[in-house]
Length: 196
Ligand SMILES: [Zn+2]
Ligand SMILES: [Zn+2]
Ligand SMILES: [Zn+2]
Image (tube, rainbow, N blue to C red; front, side):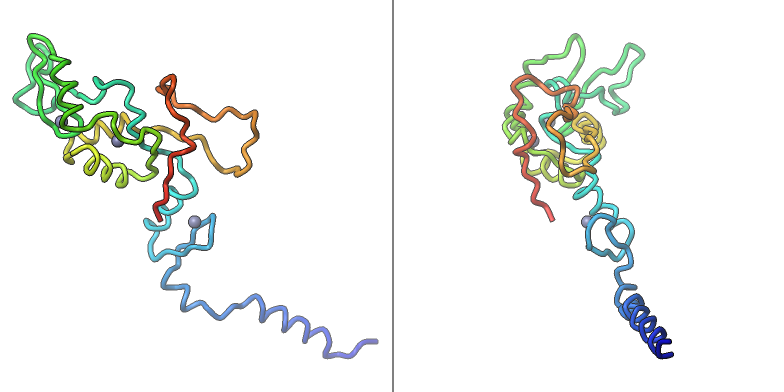
């Protein structure tokens, strides 16, 4: 025989631990990160945080541009459309147009990239896990000007990242090197991303 009060008391204590009275406070930031204790006011913020800090499914880097030619795109401006093809290519950094006929002057285009956009002069190991951070980089390090042409460049620089769910990566698992990784390209491990 045990005293009647014993069991209800234990239950009471138990319940009081479960029902934490911070509900009203949490309502302000009701979206929580699935991976850490951070809380956010809206869903977008939470998703952006998760994508950039935890999931990292995509990254952008200048090193992903396979060749300087890949920084040029068939111009989408009306004046350069013709039945024979696109009359000019646009620079992926600033949108300046370069004629394709009689033939593309690649030397001039290379000069443009080097002189105007400091092509290849940034830290090639640097990776960006958010598109807006990469756009900032294009703007500040490469005199980039946002426009429809930068979307093309973003696509070229975009890489799928191997899922990084597991923190302890076994030494045998081959980390997915992007298809365009060049020989002699520095390893990505140094690419410091300290953004909050
Ligand atoms: Zn988190
Ligand atoms: Zn760069
Ligand atoms: Zn340009």
